[in-house]
Image 1 (cartoon, rainbow, N blue to C red):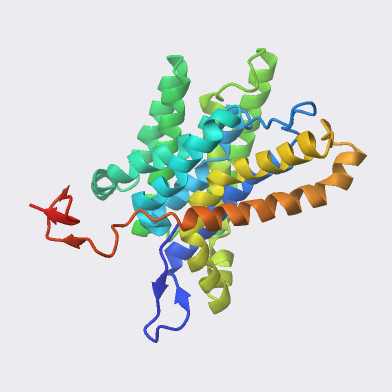
Image 2 (tube, rainbow, N blue to C red):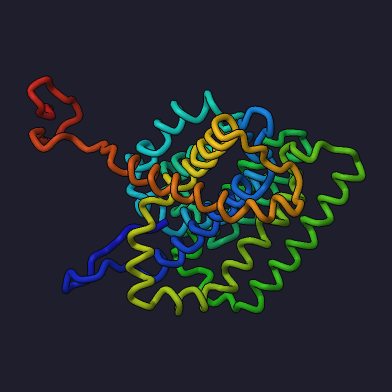
Length: 335
């Protein structure tokens, strides 16, 4: 999720190739979460209240976003101020009104923590040269055996982020698309086997997934992303595409969070005001209603992103910085 960089002539914003690749991955991660809430029947037909997708679905949709952040860090999203600008209003508005909305805050919280530890992770890679990924896999398996699903998720997410660090360092530049695709297929097989075993053992499908499922589908997502990188790099090298990605990058976190309040607002208006009864299954009525449902949700999200983007976190123009960390009543930062 990269930062926009103006070219030497100052004409069209562009991004470096790894940053453009990261933005495409971040966009794909956001699209996965949007699909969970805009296309699946998650609206109560009586009250119009929207429920966040299951924890397992949210967790499994995160690896692409973590890979993107590992490549570009939080600087591509505008840094911590941009995350706070999107997350704080979301916490105030969405948490009381939407069931399970706190699940969407897991990924931003993880990104903040990983960004804080990024210098250490970069030094770790400089010393271990990618062997640290094996350590994260071992940690995930050990945590799963110990019955700690949160630690399992943390280890897998760390591995996905660290893979992005490897991409940024150029360690994976020699990885052939065919090898990446093979890793994706192997990951899919492992993840599917984990799902089958979970179903046979009667585990709750909405609970946090096992290490096998997490590791398998994370490998599948990352492998597909790396296999597609040559195509993505050629596509994003086109100036209009690069300019669009530069505009989109700092808005990805806002779009990721506010897509849920957007669809919740549409549901509340249509159900409680207009008397609409949303479908609960993927039937013919769901297919016929989906286009206008997506349209109004998209319009609402665009308005929300525009509004939240205008809520600045920078100091007013009258403030002057003198190199310290204490804001004084006169509008200065004093040592």
